[in-house]
Image (cartoon, rainbow, N blue to C red):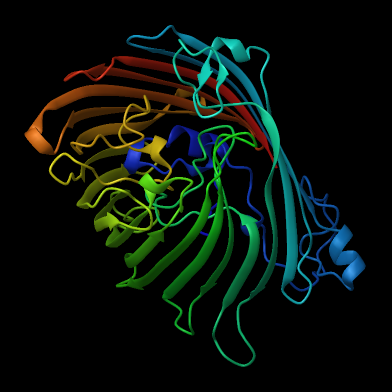
Length: 451
């Protein structure tokens, strides 16, 4: 997995399209993000970090201690979402998502994790979830059904070196969160209350090369965002992602995602091959003399039908983004995404991607129109008074086939980290549709508490 931990409000405020990672919006802190077990320290004892049942830097002496001196993970997300779209009545969803998990301490590199996830709502009739037929059908879609499910349950073996070699190994089996690169192709759909997880066996290794990361997963089931009563397709899928860091801040990634959902979801069965180049100029904190840094990424992929997909198609994807950041001030960014179409019959799709982060927060293009999609966007992220992080992003949309204008959108976001474990977010999206695309407005207020 590629999770990284940031303060929740920072991640919330910077969840704007492809320019700003958003994955931590609704993802509970990952066990992958906990500090590695280190040798005992002679420093004076300090209070245990929240959730830990013992000193996280103290390795367990035996199996009993490994099992019962680990960490409790909690993530509670309370949200009010308003949505209104052309041709439907408006919706208001008041939902609360609780994730509660327990992680054992690693013993000789072996650990385990189990996590439950529950979503409740006092007003389920005030919005509509088509995938589960929950709510009122004439209302605007808000994809947050209620229920309780097993979100993650896995066993793991992890080591920085196999034997006397420099080969690292991270082997994990069970229901797990998988996030690759920018989550465009493979992610956890972290914005919705139920997240997407994978019944799979995954392995990551550097193969003895420090700058290399090779990932493979076999996925036999997908636990989607619609909870225990939603469509969760069986799968016979393979995920391959290999990245090499070159020239310091430049990373080149090659990937192949071979998705087969059998008869459960044949339209989303596809093979995608691609390459991604991502880099930074100016270093992590910007250059010493100016405080500026520039980030960029470019992706190209080719997708064809696979498995039981009834449509014979081939389509291209291209994305480019650049962001200029001034330390302690903010960021300007711009980008373009091309989701190609095969003569209007079928277009490039991202069935396992975190799609809310792309093509606008209004979610009008979660499934690519058959005529394809072009998205030109630009925005700003800025540090506001009272430690508020704010952002604005503007989108213009066109089709691939026919180059028809499909609409424009403005997205707004503001967030503040109230305490190390509590964040507040306000977010809005305003989509003005053309070429029969419906106008859509969405507004959110949410609090997230996690440890």
